[in-house]
Image 1 (cartoon, rainbow, N blue to C red):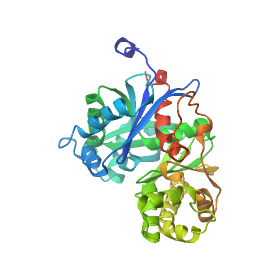
Image 2 (tube, rainbow, N blue to C red):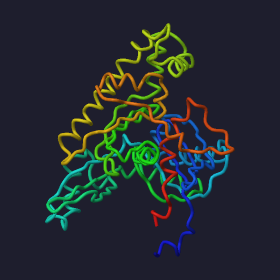
Image 3 (cartoon, one colour):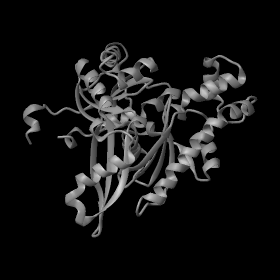
Image 4 (tube, rainbow, N blue to C red):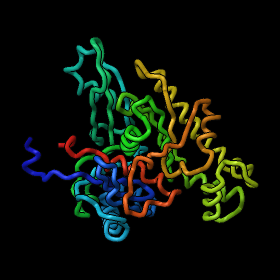
Length: 354
């Protein structure tokens, strides 16, 4: 109630911050109408430094947000109230169970989980948790932890750019939100989010991310692999990747051989996440669908590759069928997948935040 004394209610905008770039989007969630969006690439080394050591370079994030807002926006942004997405590979999440009789000791139980399974001292983390399921005997708890320096650097950058941070969440949570609204992710779903530099993997069930993992391989990795294998420039390798991909073509054999080693590493991490979910999550549901999203999902044939490798149906998600760009120029087809996470951030109903 008190929040309304200090805030004028506004629909939030999404701002995705990661090591390779920034993306922003404003959506009218009632109509699924995109009001404005934009993106900007950043220097990965400088961004990593800004995220890890904000005291040494606390202006890099704000400078790039300012450039993004002033020069890179298509359409208009509805407000300056921002939900921030942070890199999933820098966050930690776990699901665990607790006897109902121990509910009064929930905070202590979460602290124990953090100390046992997260390789960072608890005093250096922001920790959040929630009860996502309960029965007469036990509680199921979802816990998330994020390094304070990462969150603080993002908050400082957003504030210096004149925006008002409202919430912070791992980017995979935002991806799950948009998929739940557009791809029937109310089903137990395996999410494979292939970004430019990393791949995040998660199982989403009963409205929550139950387990997540990842590997430092992304779309840029595949481009470099193709360039080295075929001895061609990176631009040409990117075009081969997004036009030919893994589908039949005169260069299919070389492209597949170039990408296969790192695709197989991704598949290995996917199996680890699935195994953890099946073995460690009580009452785990059968995974009903597997969805590939993200900037690196624009490889023709990638769904079929993972279908064959994982021996389960895998498809590339298409949430853009739900989003309406109205009179705005929509992102080029090969770049649309980059905006799924930020669309999830922007689609939060502000009334649920107050």
